[in-house]
Length: 434
Image (cartoon, rainbow, N blue to C red):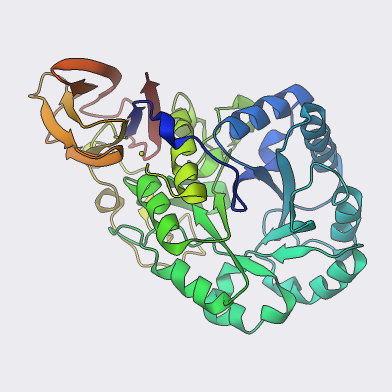
């Protein structure tokens, strides 16, 4: 099991400011089948509070039933709030067992792109996809069918930067799903820079994600990619890459453990051999969301900015059939990466980012072990980690300034072994602030 706590001190000078740059959160509509308008408004308010500009509604075909109902409810909720928060679509060509029919895409866009709550870039509605490379030929007709056109930024990551460069005439930009590292390595911005170079003057939408762990055998999915410092590192890479847009993956994909929105019981997969509840229940990630105003302020206005850590040692339990990387296995028949021991992917450390308005000392204590001390020397964000070193017990973190504790928090206990005997590679995220 993995435990990540985010603790930060208030930094008033880093409030988000208006900017032409925009930050979106990928929202799995299929996990919101029982949402009410009031639930939509609650999520929209939470997202807007931390500086997110729009939800990217991931929708799988067919265009019927809960999909139609919840799209309508989402737009009604956004309109009812009378705010600047927007919505737009990511047409998922892999999630519904069939590709999107062009006429259904056109119907949906004709209905909702004129809506005041639809996100527009330079007054043109933004539209995206999740893959769909076998249906590239549909998009010239789709674009021509929408009055005023569309600003089209697909995720055709399977083509790679080289493949996208041959299709610049039919797109306005591209979104890359390449945001998690391979093997026991940290993520770099090399792939992002390759995409940006291939796109030239066209828009690049960069993906930022805190985590990836999934164990849903029915969907041939049981693997982990390294998270650890990823939430902090990717936001720093955003500053280096300077993309036109940032898309957070995700708000509510509980099955893949990279949700930053609140836990929503009805949205957590619970199907035979595809039950995410064992690794999602009681594993909140809200702390990642609460640091976003500072990360987003960095991206939008150049300010400074994040604090987190984890629970049981990875090897303390059975891996439950999970692999390191998306590799071929008895469960995952379509894997495309080399196998790596999952316990070498994750690091047995406490990860944390401290936001301070003046230099401070940070202490971290696991159980009855000796406190470890760190110096936060710069105004803004200071990122650290410290290994478990075999220690177990509650984790306590304190921020001390001039001999006085200005902030402290205690997180869930690191355990010697997982209660079920199976390692949970998901992250528990907490937070505290002044």
